[in-house]
Amino acid sequence: MAATLLLLLAPLTLFIPGCAYIAQAAKGQFQLMAGRVPVDEALETVEFTDDERDRLLLVGRVKAFGEDVIGLSPTKNYEAINPTFNQVIWNVSGTAPDRFTPHQFAYPVVGKLPYIGYFDKDAATAEAELLTSLGWETYVRSAGAYSTLGWFRDPLWRSMLAWDEEQLSNTVLHELAHATVWLKGHGDFNESLATFLGDEAAARFMASIREERPDAYALWQDREADNALYRKEMNAMVARLDGLYRAGLPTREVLSRKEQVIAETRARWPMLGWRLAGYRQAMDAGRTINNARLVQFRVYNTGTSVFDDALERFDGDLPRFIEALRTLESAKRKGGRDWDPYAALSSLSPAPQEAEAPPRRVERRSER
Image 1 (cartoon, helix red, strand yellow):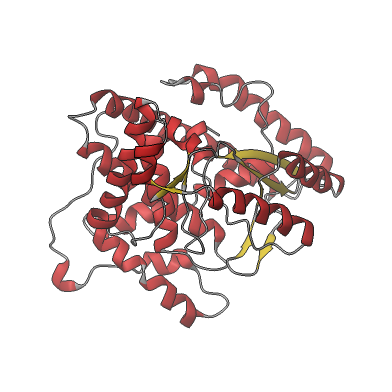
Image 2 (image 1 turned 30 degrees about the vertical axis):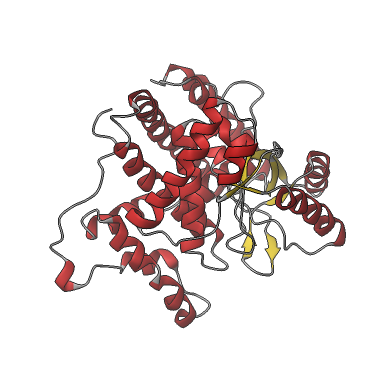
């Protein structure tokens, strides 16, 4: 998985049962929150580099764009920064080695999710070792941001100011999307929807700064092209493996053929038309490629065609689409245990009187 995608992962990790877990999570959250400084004050009192100052000011523009132009829910997030917080969150996931069945972690507030987050890397490693001992394949990855979905006023981290314009804007917009729509018990849908909305909103924001930041816009175009190719190739590998897992073969044969599929993908990966090194190196030797990693890819990249089709029904008008998405929460409450968010999404459409609204969608791939 490319670095951009890794930075877009957003765990809510403060409500898992277990005293030791809660203690380390509470300690990390306290350190993050205790060091908060309002952005305006930080700009006056903290020694930032010119690039850091630029990114800090940019966040305010991104946030205003997401809330005022795109229609994402206003929040108090990212209006402060912890100027000494340079940590990352360590996310751990586990999946069966012969099928795409993830280990689920129970969150009392948000429901079940196929990952757990730690502020402490050693604790994350211990969690992975425990899962491995129970027969799960594991994947430990870093995350440079996360959302508490309004439980706290999430600050920026100093480390976030090292990101380029698109990475920073996409992350902020992704987290605003989480604060706008979150369906308890549907973690895959929530993450994939936030990825889709973050990408769409970031495309519009990058278009808005194209003339003032042409280099940033060009880098975004390269990343868009690589990201599309990355998703295509990863989805193809996942589809091959999914077919293998459903074929009813003996476990030993399944595992052997699985390694063959992964090896074939690794072999052809460098020959694809990558523009950026991060994507080209995603399948290098030493990079973890197993079911746990592939399930995480699916968590953030499921139902893209359904989202695309739904947005098209709104003539590409992202604010109207987001407003309609808000109705999914009440639909879920009425839908019962077997309610399917993707089926509900497929039935969303603009009100009849609004159906002729002019198209507003940014054609993200038109210049590749």
